[in-house]
Each structure stands twice: as C-alpha cells, then as structure tokens.
Image 1 (cartoon, rainbow over the protein chains, first blue to last red):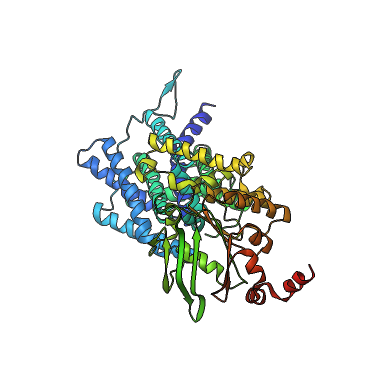
Image 2: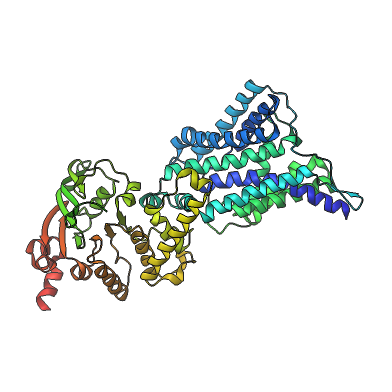
Length: 292
Length: 265
C-alpha cells in the first residue's frame, strides 16, 4: 500500500510537469492549429539560459525568472518570425517548420553550451518527507513543482475566463476573421498565445531539469510525454491537458515501479496508441476531425 | 462622438472596384446619414457585398473615396471598424461557436475596453473593472433584444432567429454610430422578419443604419432611403415608394413576375 501511494505521489509530480508541457502544446494548437514540435527544444533553450544564470552565480529564483522571461520572448519571436509566414498555408508546412526549428535550436544549444549535460539544482531539498515514520516519495521540491504548475494553471484559467484579453484570445483562436471585424488584433493575439505557451513550457523545463539534467537532447522525452498527455486530454482542451498529464504521470510511475523502469517510454507510447484507437479525439474533446 | 450633428456619417464618392476585368463597383456614390436607415438592394452580383467590404477595409477601391464623419478613410483595416464606431453583422451568423452567447457579445464590446496588453496579461485590477463593465453592457443589450436568458449558453443550439439577435446584439454593444446589416432577414421566418423589422425601426433616430437585403418587404418597410445597384452601378436612389415604381429598377431587379404581381394586387 505504501508502495502504491509512493508511486502515485511520484506520478503526480512528474504528471504535473507533463501537464505543463501538454498545456503549452494545447495553447498553441488552439490558437494556430499547429502542433509545436519545437516545444521541447524551446524549453531546453530557456532552461539553458536559467542554468547560465545559476552558473554565473545567480540565485535559483533569478534563474527561474530568466527562464520564464526568455520563454515569453522566445515564444513571441518564434511566432512572428518562423510561424507567421506559413500561417494559412497547408498544415504540413507548419509541422515541417517546427521540426526544423527543433533541429536548429538543438544544434545551436550544442554549439553554445556544449553537449555534456549539466546538473541543475532543485529549489528545495529532494529528500522525501516522512509521515509517521514512513518515508514518502514526495519531497518539498516535489510539492514546489506541483504548486508551481497548479499556480500557472489557475493564473491561465483566470486570464482566459475572467479577462477581456482572455476573451479576445479565445475569439481569435475560434474564428479569426470574425474576431477581426469585432476589433480584435488577431495577429497580436496569436503572438501572445505563443508567448504564453512558451512561458508555461519554460516553467516545465526548469522544474524537470534537476532530474533529467540540462543538455541539448535531455528534454526530447518531455515533448513525447507532453504530446501524449495532450492527446489523452484531446488537443483542444486545456483542462484535458492537465488531467492527461496527471494520468500519464501516474500510469508511467506504476509501469516503472511495478514492471520495469526500462518500459516507461514504451508505456507512454502504448497509452498514446490506446487513446488514439479508442478515443481518437481524446478523452475530453467535444468532437470534430482534425489533421496534424 | 465628435463631428457635426446632422452631417452624413458615411459617404462614398465615385467608388470604383475592379476584380481583374470585372467591374464590381462602378463610380458608386452613397451617403448614410445619422439616425436614418439606408437600404442597398440589387440582384446577386450587383456589388452589394463588395460595397460592404470596401467600407470594412477588406477591399481597397481603385478610385473614388470613402469618408467617415467628413474625414477621408484611407488605410483602415477590418479591426479598426469598432474603434471608428462602425458595427456590422455578417451574412449568415458569424458567431463564435466555442463561446457563450454573453461572451460573443462581449467580444463586440471591445471598443470601450481600455485594457492594455500588459495590464490584461497581468490581470491588473483595472482590467477586472473593465471586464465587469463590459459584461454589464453586453447583458443590457441581450435584455433589450429579449434574449438575456440565453446568456450562458453556447449559440449553436439556439433557434436561428435567436442567433440572429445575438449577432445583432454583438454589433450594437459597441454603441456604433453606424450599423451595417448584411442580409439580416436571410434564413428567417416571416414572423422573425417582422421582429427584425421592428428592431430596425426602433433604431431610427439612433445610429445610422445601412441595410443590405434581398427581402423586399423588409427593405420597403424600414428604409428611409433606398439605393439600387445593378452590375456595380447605382441605377436608382430615393424613397422606397418611388423605387418601387421605378421602371429601371423593376426591369433590373424585381423582374417581370413582381411587376405582374403589382399589376394584379
């Protein structure tokens, strides 16, 4: 029983990070109907920037701030410079462009920071908490991870549901031409959507960095897990992305704990294929076909 | 709301639009005064929609000019419309299916929202206040149109006539000085058309209204002035009663059948 609880706790922690990556993908999918295959590379770059801040003697929080700020900027720049020219072109163009960006960013990171992974400090101790004499697979840092992701989710929900800007973001995503006639600057909304998504991604990067280390290829799996979580939730649903992330996190934790940690990636693929076969629109999507 | 009180709000002077070899609008002149309803009719392909699109900034005229409150409108873009004080409904509905009725209307209320990019992003208190004011104005419009009870629902499942009202509420919520209605009667039942006519008549004395419509009874019933387009040219303009009897109009637009009906009625 303790083992099950521990695996669940570990699953929730990693699931929170998957959820953040999934949310980054969903935000971009909703705004521009593009699956951003460069998301993993983008959060790798911002995490490297955070690592550089720490390496230069900056505090953890300064580094986190640098990662979030650079994520915001990187997202906006990528939308303006790389994605904007292929908008309204066949979907495949955007897919190829983001894949190309992924390769470019990975190569650039290798040139700037080298290929050797660097360690990244956690914000708090990763020593598990002890309850009634039993050690749990839940450390203060894990709590911070869950709390940080939850805070971002709440902030984003408030932004989208409670503010005029959020309404415009949604309107621009649903029907850009009509939104334009209502006075919405659709281009700006798309840029902001990408910036917000990259911000969430950069948070995920910093949170996962202590366990995967910081290197050009260290975050590739995050894209796979995040994408799986997003598909489980239905690519259109931010709430689904969060639930999908948590479900995937727990499922992979059980696979790793009860079967073998070698099978984790295969477990993610199995989950992805199962969902695509049983509910191709995801567990939370309303309906409607889509092409990726 | 500046500008001389009784001046023409919108004025087109000799506007010409050409798509390749096709003359879509041929030196069309038109005025839409404040507080009155101006109808634009014409057969399919006469240039009605092109005219709308010129006003909205989707299409740039080859020659001629567009004046808004006496000032020339040159390079305006579609997203400038609400800021200028021009509201429009679309052919069909053009509602956001993913948003609730109230949110649909709130998107249209943008003109008065002063939320900046950064303050909205950080959800600062001012943005919150604006949002509440916006919500209030949108609800008030829905109430005026008698559909406040649908506010929280997605528009997709509502009857077509109700959805048309939502679209109208959205165009009205920014308190436009000019309201452009693109075929508001399309797809409505006779009873619903009467309701729309009533709504448009009720606006007289408020914003200027430009009504593009096929439905003759609606046009004749609510317009103060009617402009008839055919092959991109204005072939007649004047009071509805005069237009109804104009032989050029009957030939071009109403056709033999209607003339026959008129004769027997």
